[in-house]
Each structure stands twice: as C-alpha cells, then as structure tokens.
Length: 259
Image (cartoon, rainbow, N blue to C red; front, side, top):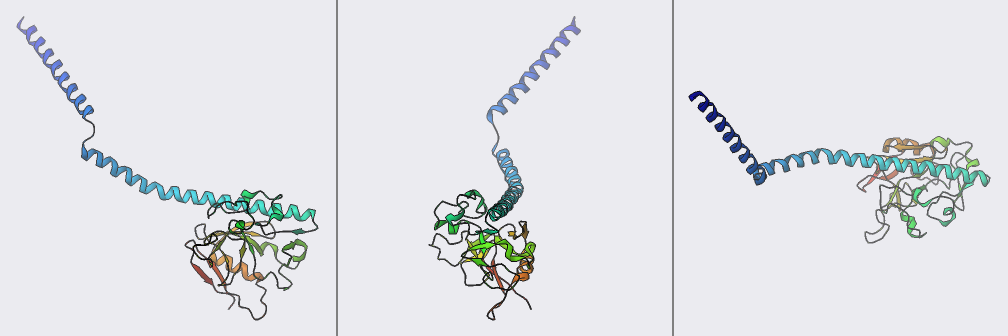
C-alpha cells in the first residue's frame, strides 16, 4: 500500500514537472526573440547579403553582356541580309530612319548603358545605339572599306581581313556637357581621337563587345582591341595612330599606336 502511494506521488511529480516546463516554453515562445537574438539574426543576414550581392551583381552584368553580344550578332545578320538584296550595300548607322523598318529597335543598343533602349526619335537615337567605326574609313588604303554617303559595300574589302576589321562596338559620348542629354550615353559614332564625341566603351568588366565585317562578335580587352584596330589603321596626312577609348568609369584612356 505504501509502495503504491509512493509510485503515485512520483507520477504526479513528473506530470507537474512536465507541465511546468511546457508552460515555460510557451512563455518563451510568446515573448519572442530577445534583443541579443534579434541582433545576431540581423548580423547573419547582413553577412550573407554581403557575400551574395556581389556575386548576383556580377551574374547580372554577365547576363547583360551576353544580351549585348547576341544583339550585335543579330545586327550582323541583318546587315548581310540587307546587303544580299542590294548588291553588297548596307547602312551601318543605327540611329537613322533608313534602317527602322529593317532592324528591330531593341537590338540597336546595349542593355548595360543608359538610356538602355532607343526612344524612337532619330536625333535622340544618336545617344542610344551602338557606335559605328568612324576613324580611318574615309582613307583609300587598299585594306579598309569606305563609306559612300554612309553606305558600306561588302564587296570592297576583298583585300582586307574582314575577320579583323571591326565596324560596330559598345560606345559612349564624353565630350558633351553634363546638362546635355547625350552626356555619358551610348553614341552612334566611334572615333579614336581624344577630342571626339564617341569613344569605344569598355563597360563589360573591362571588355567591349565588337562586331566585325565577317559577322562574328568578340568581347575584347583594351590590348586585344588595340592590336585589332591597328591592322587597318590606314594612316593619312601624317596622322597619328594613337587610340583613345573609355573605361567603365568614363575615363579616357590612351592606347598607344604603332612604335
């Protein structure tokens, strides 16, 4: 009898202890996080964000560069389809209404640089399209191609190396005042002189995407672009062959020419 009473008391004590623990746990849950716990959670989230955001930013930049390369490849295809119908002639200036009905507007500019898309106005579109090669194309060197009222004939570069002659590229305007709508925007022409309007722009992780006359596209470093540009430098009138370009921070950079 006494043994049974002891067992019953022990069972009651256990149940009471369990109830007390459960009540304490419920109170803790209801009371939420303590200030220290909340600060620890915030710190962990901040650390994870600091680790992930740069990687996400780089992934986004690579994706935009891929879109840019694809745009240039499609532009090359459009140019050559146009040339097939017009005895080798095509028109490379993308801001002009000449190509409006032939080339979709969304292909004409890089998604990594403002204003990011053409707005439909021919004048404003000077600041929202890829830049066409402007320097040295007027000189009849026997290797470079020539403009004829801004049209290009693909049959005229039989002596050239079309796989090394670039004619469309990522561009940026740096010569305009900050109040000008064209300031630090994409630009329809690219020259290599220091005092010019449009510069080749190395905006994709210190690379610039470049379309060549044979239709292929390359993502080029400054050094590889310099070497490619000098293949068809076409000097005239004692001109120098130094090349001025722009980096991602809009700084002008001199790529020295032939020694």
